Length: 559
Image (tube, rainbow, N blue to C red):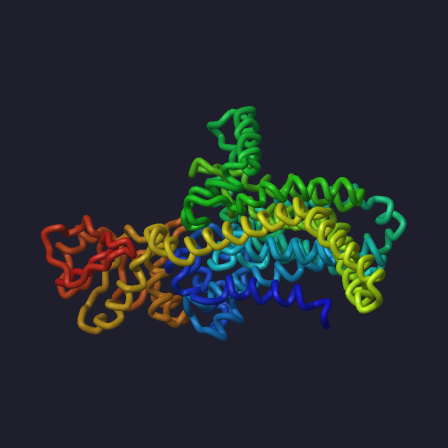
């Protein structure tokens, strides 16, 4: 049991940073979280998504046809917590926590238990990982877990050559394609690299490899068929792909290279981070600046250990991680941390190896100190002898004291400073994330929709029509989420929905519509309007809802 104490403490720390206060941090509530939650809730209640499609391979959502694994994995959380903000975010927290455990197991088997514990610690503390473990977006489900678990199972097969491990690896990596669109570029290339690294083993155990390939194909075939046979599933990818009809091919390649390099810029990694507030609190790097010191030490550890296959695999993983993001248009001026998240575990691994290298560097001096303390204890017992013996022991004491003060002073000071820097860095970033970030990022998370819907639900029986401004991202999904609208009733009463990307539903239920508030105000009577601050300026609202920073978010108007 003692050997598990360290990883148990790390897992408790990871849970403490991910599960509490999910309804407040990050601020509620992003539109993609709402649709993922409602689709999971609809599947739980009806066996169909919100649009009435039974157990779909791709989730229609807002005509962006998402991969389904995140939504399916949210179903148990909808059953336990109900259709709530906490429920959909607890799903992300669970998968994020599980990643910490399996990264420990992967690095422990690749290197040492000490390296595994350090890697798990750095992932548990990483601002990049914490942010995406607390928000219910598509990429925040089982994506990272399936990749880490797949590689761990593959490494176990490499060590023991038991077919079950390789089959499990193929299953996990096959399932990764169902988690987020970026894996369609990442996973096949990662498998190709693994095939080259372990080619001789695959050839020697070709029966294992053949069975795994067949299972992988069987798992991924339904998704491949759904994507190939339905043109609208490419809506989102066609919009964000770097390869656009009006952009020369060579320029696209140049932009891809520039964006790929952007994911390795020190400013992005350690100082500023992603410019999208939904993805990351502003003013801090995706990693700690202390990682900038640990990563080079981790690379030294890789070189010194001479673990060729592990080193090549990690470097390939690190290289491929940002590729899906580089292949898409990044319009925020920085690297896209969510699309590039597949590379995150490698940064944690290398930083963890940096800590392992420091401990290895310090260990001989620690052992010498232990030896000196042992000698001192022996001298203390000998001091009870005669005067001659006492003079001898007293001299040994002085020598021991001198050795203890000088042999490791520099190294101990250095490690103390580095540990102190990590603690200070982590406290600074995490304090900002849990206190300031919910106030700063409110606008990006559609803050105020929940409060507006609370008023609407308390008064909807008083009005014939409820109008939600079309200046809300997908108004209908917030309404059905906070109303806990029965999916069967929604499927029965909604208006037709076209196939344009991010098209907005105009009518649902008995009285809900969305549209131009200024225009509809002149046409409707006995209606309640949820409007933005700049709308209907000459009409006094019955309620103004402010962002956490005090600026107006919505106002409620009745007629």
